[in-house]
Image: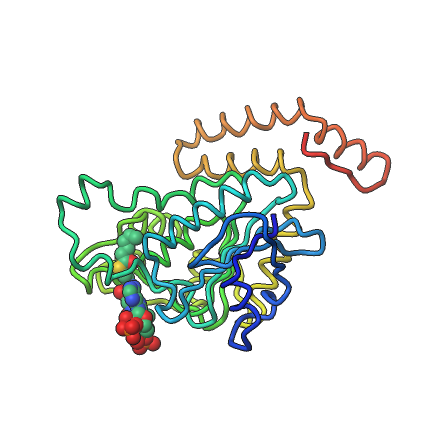
Length: 291
Ligand code: HXC
C-alpha cells in the first residue's frame, strides 16, 4: 500500500515545515482516503508503513475522526504482507497535544459512558506489527498516551511529554495512569499526573519512557531506519517476540516465562527458524519468508 489522498499530496508539496523524510511518501490512487493523516510507505524496500498526524494547526489534537483514520491506516498496514513495521509521527511542533478538548468540552457523563467514549483508541496498542513513535514537540495527554501505546518511542531533543489532564479537571483516559507508571515508576508518574508538569526528552530517556533521543530533524529518519531493521527480520517471528515482551505487562513472572517458552518452542515449527539457524551455520545471510 502506498496510499495518499489528494489533500495529503498537496500538503506534501507545500514548502512548509514537513520533515524531509516525508518528501519521499508516494501518492497512489489505491488505498483509503484520509483527511487528518498522511499515509505512505518508507524505507529502501518500502517495507515500513508511515503515518503522520496532520492536524498541524490544532497541534494534532486527536479528534475522533483522526483516531478512526489512524485505526483504518493501521488495519491497512496490518493486512499488507510487505509491511514489517510502522512509524507514527506528528509535526515538528507537536506529536499530538492531546485529545481534542473542543470536541470533549460539552460531553456529558451519560454520553461518555453509554457511548463507550474512546474505546477505539486502543487500536494502536493492539497492533500485531511493531509500531515506532517518532515524537517531536508536544506529546501531551492523549498524545503522550498514544506514544505509549507504541512499542518503541524515539524522541526529538525538544520533545516534551506530559499528562496535563488534571489542569482540565479530568484524568488520563487512554492508559496514561497505567502505561506511564509502568514506564517511569510511581513517583514520577504520580508527579506528572497530579501536577500536570511536563518532562523533557532527556528526562523521558533517563526514566525509561523513550529509548533514544535524536536531534529533532533526524528522529523520523532514525525511526524509519529502526523500522527497516525490524522489517528485515521474519515478520512471523517478530510478532511472536512482540507478543512475548507485551506479556511482561500483563502476566506474573511465572506466567510470562511460560508464555515465552511456548512461543520460543513454537518458533521451531517455522521455516524461518530453520532458515535463520541454517544461514548462520552456512555463514550466509538469512532469507526469511515469514513462514
Ligand atoms: C484542541 C487544541 C489542543 C487540544 C492545542 N489546541 N491543543 N485544540 N484540543 N488538546 C489548539 C489550540 O486551541 C489552538 O487553536 C492551536 O491548537 C494552537 O494552540 P496554542 O495553545 O495557541 O499553542 P501554544 O501557545 O504554542 O501552546 C501549546 C500547548 C497548548 C502548550 C500544547 O496548546 C496546550 O496546553 N494544549 C492543551 C494540552 C492539553 O491539555 N492536552 C491534554 C488534553 S486532554 P486555536 O484555533 O484556538 O488557535 C486529553 C485527555 C486524554 O488528552 C484522555 C484520553 C484520550
